[in-house]
Length: 452
View (cartoon, rainbow, N blue to C red):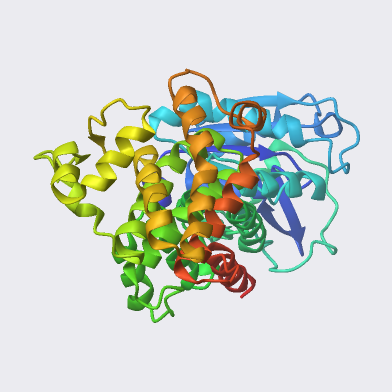
């Protein structure tokens, strides 16, 4: 028993003019593609798709199969379709039939074979397209002619079941004319189109899944393709060390803009994810990301950019939570505490966890103290978020999906306006004027390897 016959198979086969008896050349008889596949694969179950033209009412197909392989179960699928060369005629029929076979037998470990040598060119093409487009694993089998060429000089015969005995069975057994075709050109076009569509939407995880799910993809595309896709998955998950190592291990230049400055990288990468969320309309996630972004950026601006040592007002609890403490402000800057008490309408500043609204009040205090136009300009851009932050906090307690209309009506700004202001802050604080977007640059590289 050969390797094929150790597996469990179901065959779906259109019936063609050369079934069940194949061509006859110089008196030599051969079996048709359908029978030859059955000989070499021994499918336990065969579904025959028989058009009106080839339905002779004599059960010749099943009898021929039983003569070769008595234990095979045969099911006839009769079609009244007369336009056998219409490329659209069989698409739905084939798809539904194959899906039904899969639904019934997939749990039992069967492999589905498709005979792509019998039938009209339209039938063969539809089966090949099903191989390419279906989520079901299908094995297309092509059968070459005994003469390894065209069938033009075949002898005309009138079929009779007894003629099958004229087939040289030993020759048919030794000469396996079946081949499992890969339809790689079709698959490459399909995978390429799917990946391009996904990266245009920055869906790198889905694109990588498409690549990994097709066992032929690794041989169809440049080896850099899965590297770029996995790099983006790491990068969007803030796994920067893994993302960088992956490129270096594959001798690919690291796509970076920060010149090794981890602070710059951290802020810009976070902003890039916000930009992607906004562009995709994932506005609930976009809005949720605003607060940590502006809070951490304002903290950096005060503490690092202007060396105001905000840390001296902050206590870090055992669980890692940062608190702005009244006692620490009183100890280190009584003037600031007086300012905050007055800002809150004479009510005493009680202290709070580190948050944007308190930081923007502290930032206001330093506007007069520093008398620095650049500082005031950046402060004004941060102040832009004060109203947004108040309204966002209200929205955070409502169980609704946030869309553009919600943002405009509740935050009085559009999502693109908010995004542009985030970008403006980054450029001012880090003195960065380039509009470079790293994921568009990576996408350019991905498209280049897809073309190879």
